[in-house]
Length: 224
Image (cartoon, rainbow, N blue to C red; front, side):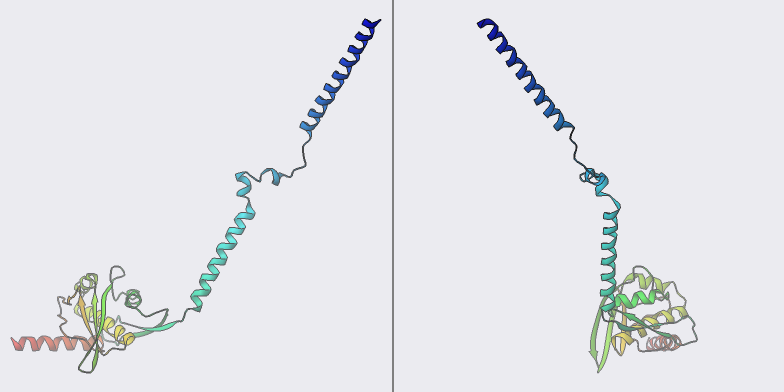
């Protein structure tokens, strides 16, 4: 009788353990198949595709447009100055005087404007130095230009050379409020096949400059 009771007890215990194990297995299985609700955007949060989605691109473009607008606004608020550019194309006429707006008046700005009218070479023409001196109650501007200007003048006819030199002289006179300009190239007196510019030059037309150079040449020959 005792053996039967023991066997029955063991059988009940085994049934209970099996049931518990199945319950545990069922619980584990249930947890594994439970999937929380997620949108496609949630799934891509950490992916490259999400980072490159169109909204971010639109934001970057908006920021770039904002920066451009601020830069334009800053440029518009900068004070403007008027510069006078003198240039000519016709030997027998006076130089054209054009007024332009600039943020500041510098030799580079003036030379750049003259280059647009083919008065100086577009590239490599630079002002190496600009110095103002008082001489005999006059304000003389000493303008030293780069070699490119001297080489450019060398290729010109006498008439074209006078147009070029007169344009440069009158442009710098007008903007620096000087009485005369003494031109040099790389620290040396400007020389060409047509003339040697040993004296400072005053406001003049191309024709007047040619007459002045001819008079100086005659004086030089008489002095010899």
